[in-house]
Amino acid sequence: MFKKIFRQDENEINSEISAELPLPSHVAIIMDGNGRWAKKRFLPRVAGHREGMQVVKRMTRYANSLGVDVLTLYAFSTENWKRPNDEVDFLMKLPGEFFDTFIPELMQENVRVNVMGYKEELPQHTLDAVERAIEATKGNTGLVLNFALNYGARAEIVTATQAAMRELLDAGLTANDLTEECLEKHLMSAGLSDPDLLIRTSGELRLSNFMLWQLAYSEFYFTETHWPDFREDDFKQAVVEYQNRSRRFGGL
Image (cartoon, rainbow, N blue to C red):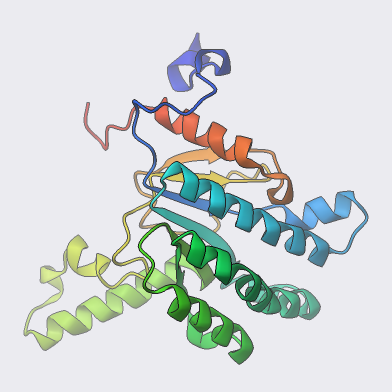
């Protein structure tokens, strides 16, 4: 009885995406479990990251085929610099490998690449790969593939607040004039809608400093599946559950 109050029984949820119900326009994913996936297979952690990169390609294709407008992927946090140097070095090389092999397909699929995060702190070779992808796809009008790279939500909010306050002071205004709209236009996600659906893989039930402002009214979907094992059916199930929830945004 109580289970049905908070979450529909899986047997009551149609396993197919409904054409009659709205799709999430913006899907954000915390791609977790690469290291655990590799450990289970007695492989180095970097093997999990490489396999995870292939899943990014598959999920980009699938999200685009569904008609999702924005797919945001948490690729590297500001806290991830604390990891071992060899793992960080590998992660910083992945964008070059990813974009150099995937840009032709992104062009064919009309996908536009966007990156939010503190890009100026990235190694030059990583930044060059990111900027090449952004430049090559800037004219595309389909899915926005938005990578959160060297991103942290608390730092983003502080940075946005500082920028908003400078703008107010320059206009002769005060802190009392600060509004949500004024702050939002200085967030790294400015120009993108807030996520409708957040997916986190690998069984963790936390946000890990990801889009804390933007996720205020998002629907959350958690799965035990490690990111390298995440497939189209997993994505579909998250969308189906989203479609079977009632979004009231504080109303009745």
